[in-house]
Image 1: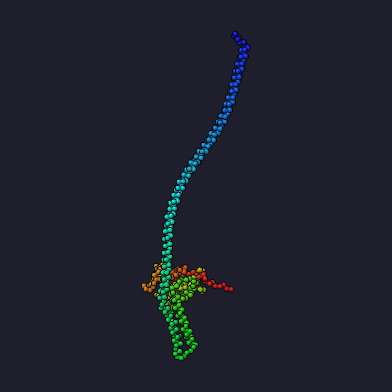
Image 2: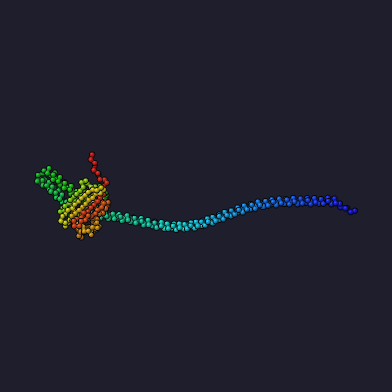
Length: 376
């Protein structure tokens, strides 16, 4: 039997289907909502990821910038280090070359020092030889001076010897004649002893002057040196009728020097003046001595013919002489100049051609010279 579908049943069936459809749609809507929410969540996550990626990109860009800067700095540092390395190599090369030059220089200096030591030793040896030669020359000059003074010295010795013979002869006559008078004998013998002492002084002076001895410096009285020099030259000057005038300082003039050498200086100057006065009409030697603040000044002047102007610069040269051959050695003034220099003094010529010559000597005063005491 066929079932007849009624409208109510159809409506219920449609409602059921509609209900199912609605439920299906609601289910789909819920699924769509879930998908939308999931998509929103995903979109949020994507947005966060994009932000993090942007930040990371910025960080990467910053890191890349820093890296580029570091790379540039490193490149510059590498270049500087390379330049420094090259400079250091150049410096080391220069240092090596400098060390080589220094080594060569050191060897050269050692060689030079050796040569200098040998040269110094040779110079010292030659200076010693020169000093010995100078001392020998001075001694030769003294002996030559003594040779020139022989005649006058013999006469100086002859007088006391004759007087001794006379006084001793008187005593012998008294003894032989039996007219012995003690007082007269004592007087004659005393006079003979005075003459013996005089001869002894002359001989002692000659021995001292001619002795080759070590040169020592001491306080020396210029007045005493002049007196001893004139005593040796006295007879020669007297025989040639040469007048000697002394103009000495009131107080004694004491210098620091060697008495024998200074005596030789004045004997040489007196001998030079003696020879200059040989053909002069007025024969006079003037000796002046004074004292300055620190130096003694002595002038020895003669009234001879003077020295030709063209020869003034050579008078102190060794072996130079204006005398004829055999009349002089040419050493007197040269030795005089050397002695004065050794005494830290000075000697100069004040020449007056045709009127005479004056030698000026300056010598340092002795520091041991006694000053006059102040009046109480």
